Length: 444
Ligand SMILES: Nc1ncnc2c1ncn2[C@@H]1O[C@H](COP(=O)(O)OP(=O)(O)OP(=O)(O)O)[C@@H](O)[C@H]1O
Ligand SMILES: [Mg+2]
Image (tube, rainbow, N blue to C red; front, side, top):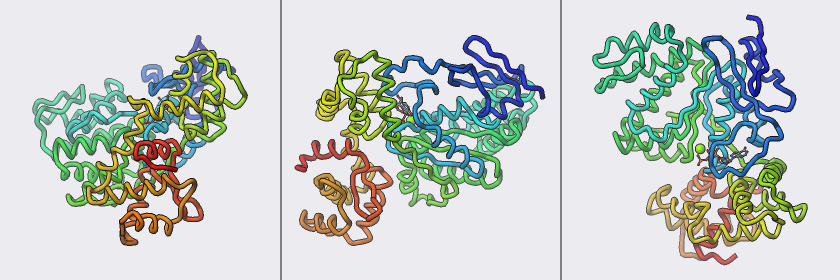
């Protein structure tokens, strides 16, 4: 097919051949691609572009356009490369930028791949899950394609189903539900020549909802069904992520037939904070966007390091600074972070890191987990395993070696602590360490 490129006002339309080489495509010289969609009727893609010098205003937790996303190119490359081979789980502490990465992938997909983003937080049953997958797939099929699809053909055999709208009937057997999921995924793969990725955000929250609303057995069944689909359809690609670690759900399911094998074919990619340079750049862009005057040359680097290069907190601090006045310097940045750490209404929700220990760990282990983190928080730098053991002993705890190793592993997976190359442990985020000290009354 001939490439057709049309540069319109803020949009650029390209034909299918150019679409498959999207990365090499040049838009208007000063613009960045912000949104891409596929126009089924005209068999072409439409890219909405933003000017690079557009004002980047601080945006606390809201959707940000792709043009305002800083420093994720290499990570997104890594994810796309991994997707050439298999499905992926994205993990990170909350507010690091997982959803933002999914938005970038979905709005600027690669190599002719279509992405279907879906936030699953409000899904509470297996039936609702199958329905949202079917709805997303239906949205990808043009009218005739949809009515001729295998899903529609199957739905016509079910009483009360809406075949053209891909709607399940009010009551549907377990077998038919799984068949609908299988057929919808097959239709999606077929209509995109196997190049489609389902981006499922808040996947663990959905599993937790299913456990509560239905049963642990249903959550295991859902995971088993998806594993079966991945095995039988080698081109199926899922990106699973969410603010709660999937490992918590898997361990909750262990007594009900769940095990690590349910997801061990889906390798993990960590979404880290920004690099210090990118975090500083983001701070500068946002201060500029808020028309703030920088009192010294270090305000941006200080902000980046005070908040561990986490983009969300950079947005939050800039927004707060802009609310207070039009000038900022490095000592004001430090003061603002200090204030937010002790503010009574806990604007950064850092108390959550203390509170969630009781939900994340079995009740009998909570005192030991508190003691480990208290000890690591009190230290000025990283502490070795032997020091933690003696610290616990002096606090009256005597965990056996296996239990301690297991707890330290889980604390790493939950992003409380990280281990350095010498085997010593330190808080993963200095902000969390500071907040932990304040809330638990730990003297440094
Ligand atoms: N790369 C980035 N560049 C600029 N800002 C970013 C970037 N990533 C995230 N942000 C900012 O941080 C906010 C939170 O990001 P996001 O919602 O993607 O985090 P998350 O990891 O999905 O959080 P949660 O775990 O709570 O779901 C965004 O609304 C945006 O303001
Ligand atoms: Mg998110």
